[in-house]
Each structure stands twice: as C-alpha cells, then as structure tokens.
Amino acid sequence: MLPKINRLRHPKDFKTVYSKGLHRKTPHLTLRALRSQPRQTEHNSKPSALVQPTRMGISISQKVSKRAVVRNRIKRQIRAAWHQFLPQVSPGWDVVIVVKPTADQCNYAEILQELKQLLVEAEVLNGYTGGKFL
Image (cartoon, rainbow, N blue to C red; front, side):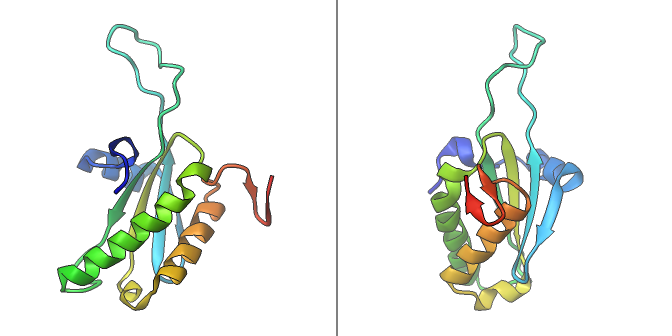
C-alpha cells in the first residue's frame, strides 16, 4: 500500500489532472500528469516553499473486466510498479494511471515496462534523460 501522502483521493484532484494535465499513451495504459501547485498556508497568502509530494491515483473501469478480482489484481500490480519508481520520481506531480480494456491480458513485467516508459515520456522520473540516468 502506498503512503497516504502519495495517493490521489479526492474526485476534484482527479478532475484537475484530467482537465489540465498532459497525457501519454501505451497499448495498455494511459498516464495523465500535472505538476501540482504549492499550497498556501492558512495564515499566510504566499505559497509555501515546501514542494508537495508526488501523488498517484488509478482509474480502472468495468470495461477492463466485469470481475472485481481482475480489476483489483491490475491495481495491485500498478501500485507495486509505482512503489518501485517512487524514489526516482520528481516531487510535486499529480499522476493518474488510466487502465485500458486490453490490460487484462498483461503480466507484471509488461505493466512495469509500460509504466516506466510513460513516466520517462512525461519527464516525471527524476534525472532521467531518455537513455541513461544522470
């Protein structure tokens, strides 16, 4: 399970990422990402200097599979892959992973590879320039 600070939980956060964020696609997954804005504190009108942690949410519909067991397995695999990349992810991103209906035939290795490809294309991974880590 991801730490609470690394989860997108509110529908308004998902809507903001969908409407304002960039998107990248692979055969089984779609990534939507938005650089989050610094939050304002209650007693100060200036944005705080603290960078917000990167948060992730997963969107998977019944079009992927009618069976909740299959959908939950895919979500667990995506969370496990995300957990591997979390130390390398730049702070301050809101990311939504949308699962396409073809993903029910994917194994963990394919999900891991596609998620890495999406994060690199969206420049969400910290210090990654296409071919090599800096």
